[in-house]
Image (cartoon, rainbow over all chains, first blue to last red; front, side, top):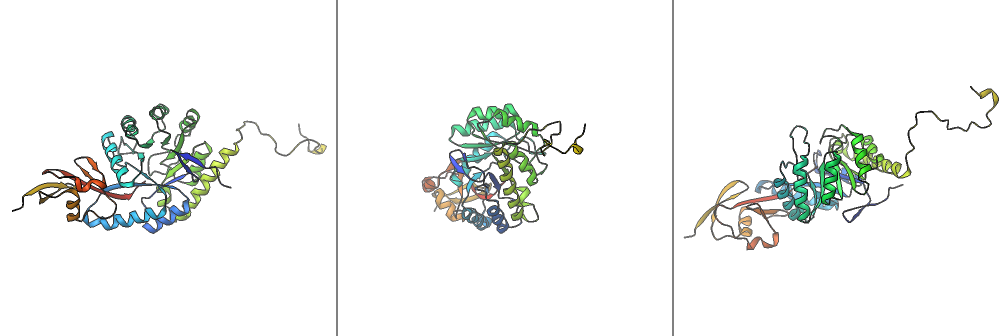
Length: 265
Length: 70
C-alpha cells in the first residue's frame, strides 16, 4: 500500500523522499540508488567550471537529466545571505527551476544554519520569485518567521549534516508539526538509518531529505529501498492514527467469561 | 593591430581581443559546452543574450556548471 500523494509548491508528488546526488562511490551507483529510492526530487549544486573538467560536468548533467526527477538546487557552502542569493540566481538560470534549497550556514563545525541570514535571504528570494525550501534549525520562532515570509515548505534538521545521529530533538520537531500544521515539513540532515526516517514520518512530517545515509551505505541501492519502505511505513502509520501511550497495562485478549481458575485478584 | 584587454575568468587573468562578446569569449576558451551559466560582475547573463553581452577590460566572468549536491 502506498501513501497518499502530496503537493509541493503546486507540484504533485507520490514519493516523500528527496535524495541527494553527492558522495556516491560512482555515478552508476548514484543512479541505481536514486532509482531504487523512488524519489522524484533530487538535490544538485553548481561550481565553477574549467575547460579541463567540462566533460565530467556534462556526463553528470546527462545522468541527472536521464533520471527525469525534479531538481532542487542547493546553496551549499554559503555563509552569508548575499552569497546564497547570488548562488540561487545562478542556479535558477542553470537548472531552469525556481525551486531552491536555501542553505546559509553560520558555523563550520556543525554546519548549523544561520537563522538571521537565512531569514534575510529567504525574504529576498521570495521577492525575486523563488520557491524557497529553507534548510533550518528546529527553532519554532525561526520557522514561524520563515512561514510568515511565504515559505510553504520548511526543512528543519534532525541533526547536523552528515552525522547520521537521527532526530536529536524529537520534542522540538513535534512542536513544529503541532504549531505549523498547514506547512510541508521535511526533516533534512542527520538521518542515519531507516528507523530515524520512520520516527520523523510517524511524527507527521511530510517527507525526508537525505543523502549520506544512502550514499555511504555499503549497498546504496539496497539502503535506498530500505528508506523508501521506511518512509512509506512511517507515513502510513501516521495516516492510520497511532495509539496513545498509556501508563497502565491493558489486556488485548478479552477477559469476559474467562474460566474461574484464570481469575486473579 | 587588434587591441587587447585583460579580463578575469573564474579568477584567472586572461588577455583577449577587445572586440569579443561573451559568447565568443566562452567559445574561444572552450567553456561553452553543454550546461553552464555565465555570470559577469556578479550578474547572471541569460543564455539567450550571451552574444549581446559586451565585455569590458577588467570584467570578471564566472562560468558554473552542475555538480552533485546534498
